[in-house]
Length: 329
Ligand SMILES: Cc1cc2nc3c(=O)[nH]c(=O)nc-3n(C[C@H](O)[C@H](O)[C@H](O)COP(=O)(O)O)c2cc1C
Image 1 (cartoon, rainbow, N blue to C red):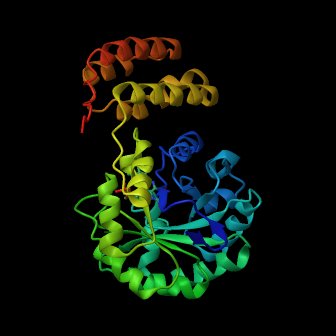
Image 2: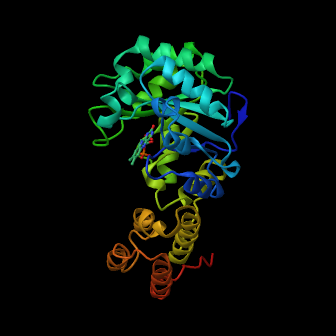
Image 3: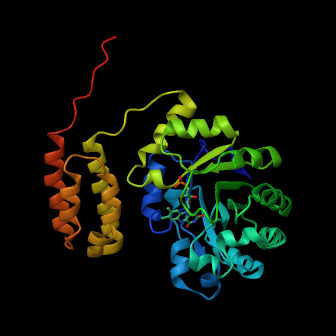
């Protein structure tokens, strides 16, 4: 799979999830085989104002490549300037956020609010493409209220955008209801650039079904990757080799959780005991005794105690690990 001149080793993409997909998590997902990762959205206004926080969000490490930096904003000129700023970091792509439904973003005309004005979206696409030599992509919802995503993507393609990601929910839907994959298919039939399908993939089988039903070139996974980077290895195995991988064992899940915690601690120091809580909750979801362990964890501010609690919990969980069935055929 090739987007612009960038060769991707398979058809999977990690979605940008603000508050979740930081550099550490992106690198972990790359280890499990995801072909492309996208940063959390960085504010174009913040970057142009020299906001260090926005620049921090846009930063990535070399072990994440290929990587896309996502920008959100409302004005073509500001987004173009922001694109020039992040181009210095030499990402593989710059992605335009045309899908965020959050009030604080749409109030200022950014994210999914861009889909109310197709002339505006095309002008933004053109301005950003002209501002940088890095290939530009865009991530869109189906529309504000009514679906307009097909025309929006055609206009972005005309503006020089090199790929589009479709999360087929309207702004009004937020994250409720089901993503209507028929919009992904409609876009795929209407443009020649690669189309990345997104929305409600929770398993390798879902990813395959999305490709079969829509013809999309790549699949993007967001929420289902939280505490579950294995999903990328599972999707690649099914798509590339027709293989169904066994889910990770309890022990593998806790080992990966510990590894994530240790890396986060190197970055956040003691505060990792707080920043990692929600991530840990996803790694242990559905494991025996997870509720009691989560409660214990959520009152713990000392990272050493978190680690020792994790060790005790791992011993408890290991004793309840189901025995793998051996196929004697
Ligand atoms: C907590 C959270 C944060 C998100 N942050 C972003 C973001 O920064 N940029 C973006 O384009 N989409 C963002 N999204 C949307 C996701 O990238 C994705 O389009 C959506 O979750 C649907 O995919 P999924 O069903 O695989 O989760 C976010 C979604 C969630 C739940």
